[in-house]
Amino acid sequence: MTEVSELALPEFNFDNTFARTLEPFFVSWKAAEAQSPRLLQFNQELANELGLDASALNTETGAAIFSGNEVPNGSMPLAQVYAGHQFGGFSPQLGDGRALLLGEVIDSNGRRRDIQLKGSGKTPFSRGGDGKAALGPVLREYLIGEAMHALGIPTTRALAAVTTGEEVYRETVLPGAVLTRVASSHIRVGTFQYFAARQDTDNVKTLADYCIERHYPQIKDDDNPYLAFFDAVADVQSALVAKWMGVGFIHGVMNTDNMTISGETIDYGPCAFMDAYSPKTVFSSIDTQGRYAFGNQPSILVWNLARLAETLIPLIDPDTDQSVNILTERVSAIPATHESYWLSEMAKKLGIQTAIPEDDALIRDFLTLLNEDSVDFTLGFRTLSDVLRKNKKEAEALYKNTKALDEWINRWMGRLKENKDSPEQIADVMDQINPIYIPRNHMVEAALTAAVDATDMTPFSKLLSVITKPYNQVEGASDYTLPAPKSDIPYRTFCGT
Figure 1 (cartoon, helix red, strand yellow):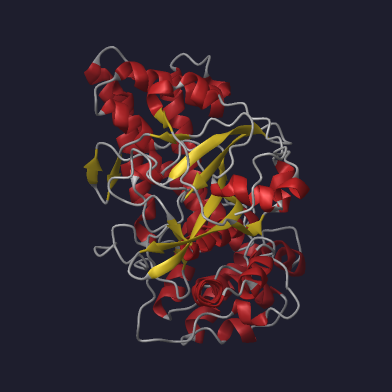
Figure 2 (cartoon, one colour):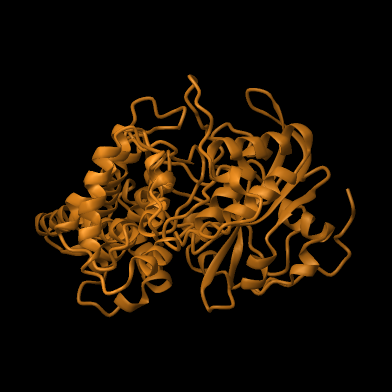
């Protein structure tokens, strides 16, 4: 291992409000020593956005920092504590079992961002695990997070991926790795649940005050800031899940410890994007009952937010019954909020800029066509712009029942006549809403297999370069638009980092 401790480490300019003000919410900790860290992937664009010295970090020194071997000046490494409902069952203590928050920085846009190591070794919350991460899951999270960012979906992002030079033991022996993850914060619904389960109202209030100050300062002078806080979280999460539904994304493990207060997508474990459209689609190997199937995500959104509401009962009103009634009313309103976001999201995919209630039937009838003919979700929407350009061949090739498609197209075209723009102009706008490239599951697996089994990062780099330009044709990338070849073996994803 190259010694870097005597060298001047790059400055991060940490401003660690979580560590300074929320002592009961974490344990200070140190990463496990990595034998021979090597920087495998570095996000220079994100480093610049964070105000970091990218040239100084894209080095052996950066590898030492991003493995946890070196602690940059001002960092206060800590493991956060939280609880959570996992597949409906409550675990009163979870926490960062393989992650360490290095600290917070203020980025070039004035936003506060966490920088966290994931896979950096055991913590007091490891629950018997080794706290390490394998290379494949680290690279999967890197890929999917960057793809989601390029699609305009709020998400945690990857700053770096480092191999540790060690082996980790799962079903087989795998190369170890550490992911450096960036988030608006790592506070979850489960963080509130940890203290609420202990009837520690004072710390629930402390956490709520911190979250309001950090994420929703516009509501801190509200007559009832804690109710406004719940409404704000419900709103951003409703919008987030609507965006997932708009691109065919399946999180795979929507536990309450995987739902952020900030409204960002977090914890890309058994996640995937649909090929053939079906609301019942499940990829996660551990979701045997389909709890987190694609079509169930909106209802799980409501269920998770109801769990957040429960933690806030003592803060809303001195009268517990009144507090419960108020929050029950707010939770009951979430489906309509989500539906509004979903309707707007899906209408724009059809070239409708201002949705009206009657558009709901048009959208759902199109989804029925996709479902009945097992049409690829991404291509089903993308080829609609070709129809507007008077080329129906690619669209029709996706369907068995072209008569039903033609009937729907006639209805759709009639709706678009209310738009002042020409069909060609609408098509151009749609092409910047409906991606042509997503992280196709077979492409992701091929890239990860090459990286893990053959130490070949070329497929990963190529895939990353394509999916981070999701809306525009990339020369030589036609294979990246195609669904996986038909197989009798269903695709499965696994929790892994």
